[in-house]
Image: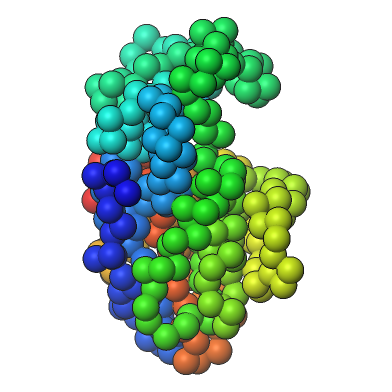
Length: 304
Ligand SMILES: *Cc1c(COP(=O)(O)O)cnc(C)c1O
């Protein structure tokens, strides 16, 4: 491995203490991937590692990828490339605004080149001519939006390697593209059911997307996609979610983000409250990071 970022073996499941968990006798542990790196946060580190390795093996010097103005993936790619001597291009959804979001400003400061695509071009993932040329000339590799793809899945498959504790009966993660969940399904122990909390509304082909990343799995591990915990859609939220995130931080010391992990922990605690888990159940929640996205909120909305 040529990367300066080595596998974060110091990250291990930690017990979560909360009055409701105690009352219901549910043992929850959390895998704090948010602690891996300040910028290459959470699952993004795992999803990028094999794309970067592929770039290095094929002597490509540049990674090109897609994302929105608050994208964790864009910032993670910028930081990852910076630390590993690769150049990075971010193809950003929508017109350039006069002031960049803090996320894009950080990416720029890390040396990422930003190009803005119209929403229509972005939807079609239409590459600007200069980028198309770099890819044809084999100067750059293209990482799909959110790291979705076999390399991303392969990287996410190394997440369960951090879990040395006895098996968890249920493992929960947030689902955007489904790459992380596919990795967990691929390599978590058989005794675990993998639950995905989908943060997009009405994304009916998610199961199909996930299965497409698991082509040679004869006997797939047990997994369930939950489609009712999106709060109205991607990046939608209301004051109740903010209140939950603040209370959750007060009670457990775990910070969460507004797009993915706030909804994830809310969904799990809702199931605890509604007695979905029998007493003695052992569950693991994968904290996939993303805290930088909270900068889209008004200052002071969160207490952390
Ligand atoms: C990108 C992201 C996800 C979504 O992961 P997928 O592998 O695309 O499903 C979940 N949580 C956080 C914090 C993220 O930044």
